[in-house]
Image 1 (cartoon, helix red, strand yellow):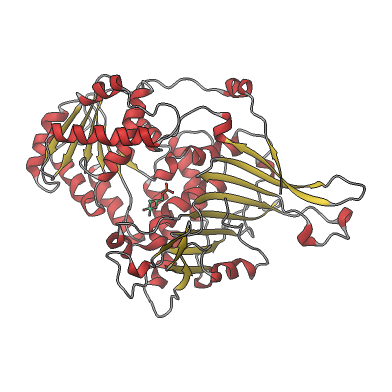
Image 2 (tube, rainbow, N blue to C red):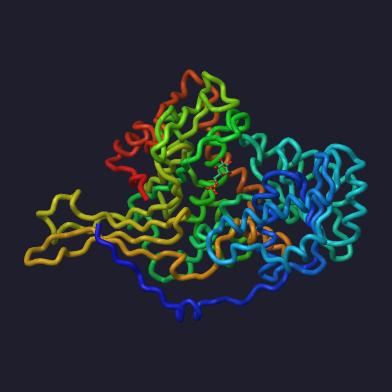
Length: 512
Ligand code: BG6
């Protein structure tokens, strides 16, 4: 396919620049699970990036709470190593840890060893937090969410008096079905107000996911086309090459559907399909997301394909099948791939299918949203077979490449009228100089400044689970829920191709 690359202009970029953000107010950032992997791999690097950008106040500090036998000195050394790895890995500018920033952070980290389920831990924590602002970040297994929040409440650490804020960030998984998500919501809301709860979906921290709203609502030419009159269907793909790695035990009880769909994929769908909010105020945005998620038709089993990877080849190397992964049952029926067709029952989208697919050990890593527009009327090209007219597709690339591609037809130069497909591509990295981030910078900064737009409200979470609950019920009856297989390194089960083929459509290829 011929390529047309959009040219970059820093003048345009400058004209669109917004106001510079200010440092967040002083805050004690308390991380439950502070000695764990998430903290080292993502939270500390994100905090480092915020410090480099001058977005943390001198009154910022970190208290890491965990049960492991550590000291503040050891933890600081571990954070230092994790940061060195992080800056070395990003492979662009600034591959060396900034010493001034590390010195600043180093003095602000302390460790508190204690059980998440004993009141004494919270008494000691109260002394560290004193009377100031605090964020309590729950980077722990989901079974601790309820107990930690109960203890925070009992020890009055969640009380907001004299203008201070107390906020709780809850990681995923938020429940394992609709019922448990509701129960968790009501448990948390027994202690906290909704505005104190920040339910994270790390997809919302991705620049390109946030860009979906900017693209749709700050440009005049997309929105008039964004409806059932012009759009044929939408494909949302989150393909991964990784397997379950060391998470076999967790994944066995979770599977691709619970792990990726009610949260990440539903957020992509909501961003793509929601109506324009009346403002970028958190509740205005979340109201619109809830509305569209609630409008999803109840899923039927025939609209869902579940698959599990068998041994195959990836990047030229052999990889084992899911059932041979550590901590996975040899007869496991857990799906590592799921594809589905959803319909949204509202004025804008009635009759426009949304096809979603996600899986592990697929041919390539790629997350994207492809908007397939309807064909132009054929009057002028009567003699051109339908399949030879280039479909008009707008692809929003979320990762690993970030940008937007438009695919359309153009006349191939020459004396006769022949049509060829061309692509016009906007690549984030060509236009903007920002270095890569963890995706958690915005989320942490927003939490400290009280902007909940990119966090999920109780009703958003429940709407995501409600949409997939019929499939979960169905999967609980293994005799009825077939599990297809696909070879590691392939594009997924052939049954997923059949899901679209029966509507006369096909998936975009899993190629770079
Ligand atoms: C997590 C899932 O929420 O998202 C993982 O638990 C998955 O299984 C990950 O690999 C994907 O995130 P990303 O940012 O790599 O697309």
